[in-house]
Length: 210
Image (cartoon, rainbow, N blue to C red; front, top):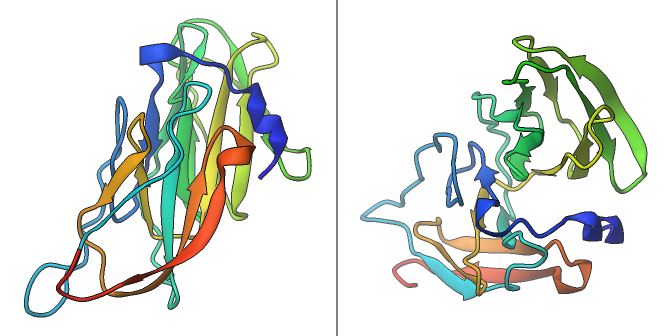
């Protein structure tokens, strides 16, 4: 993860995060509809609870689970990054690889959307977004993307693109719960706005347990 994410500024209780279209969805502020959570034969899938890094620079940690046998199913809904009151909403959006995102301008001034791939420091696209004329883009590469407006310096948001089909946002103190996850072996990744608090490990989820 790139240390340039330290540019995220604390925004207190106004901070909003969206986990869009993943199997499990916890959120601060708003969220797109989640897909149905898979279950296992004979009852509900086990749960997974843990503690990740606490919130950093005004943003909670995001925890993802990638199964050893990945799924190619991609959510069909297009989550929205909106511009109004000279801000981007949400501050942080989590989407799947191959998922389309809609960028809107809901106020009466002209904005633009510059999206930069943080790892390579390269601009993915830079488009003008007049009021009422949304722009859509499908993200094909996993990683972190910085969203800014050249016209209004200070507008800042981030998009995390992941191949993992499961994601939750942690509480302020880092606690998180995946209420139902099919048994199996998973790669667990913790993203934090503080690069020093990010981590990757493996976890085994057993049937009939928590």
